[in-house]
Length: 448
Image (cartoon, rainbow, N blue to C red; front, side, top):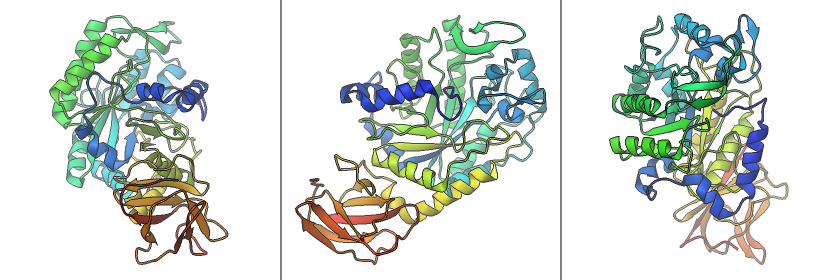
């Protein structure tokens, strides 16, 4: 992932400001440019599912943010560069990587019970260590660790069994590769970011070999690239890889981090665009402050924040990719599981307002929450329950029926007024975080 200093990266603030303030035409360019016209059909399942699990897992999980017994400042998955660790020393982590508690079925079950519909997992992060069975290098989890197990095979099988889409992350930047060179080459205290391509042709061949393995061995539905900001990675490289992998599987969805305007959807990180983006997009976010497991990172987001973030993404027409960082032993930390179960509990009642929904039909933000829509229905996700028992909806349509999603037998009184549609609510909210009102209408939505 892009490096974040503390809870918020200054560089990302600048990017997010640009996203939220720049003209719509520029937003469209950022969100979903690609080589060919967007194949909307292949995106249908992804845009319907709305909610996915991101998993960052690798050698850095074994180190847990520590080196030589001391904590290293920065993100857990950036340990190699933040700790200025030489390649050969960092590689020693593989000798002790033995996640005896890993259970693919359990991981997928957690995602499913959280209401997540797809999983994206790191096959190779910036450190270059491969978490899958690859013939392109011995620097991988099967050949290079005492575990000798291919977790991607087990996870892809578990996903298929449980009805979850299996998707994969792949870093372009590779601190272990001989075809890339860190700008700071101090042998004792190297810094790997920024990194520069020094042999594009050979690295592209290496990438193609591995991407073919990932596509054919695990039948990934989506490739989530990262690290394309490195020096020397060109537009020609990005187009070549995109065309190669979609040639292998035309239905493959590809994010926009091949950079240079190539990809199927946008990927704002750790922030949600206030009004969404005009094309397909997905916010990726951590549950705490780091992507990979880091001992002592207990700055957990609340259930309220997480559920509201999911609603916010759906209201803007986007997806929410929420990260977990399993330990070196293969355990998803309990605080992460607890929060995911809270989200799953909310979605069991209110999922109809999220899955398969479209962005808000309203031009202005609602003072009491958010809105999504489907054919013949407008959903109001109310996060601020009104003390006076009523809300005004900027809607001209005649209402066939109004009710609470938590109680489909309920009946809410409505009244057309000069200010909009007045909806009368019960004194108490059905849910302490977000309660959903459903407005069934005739014809297309007619906002005020």
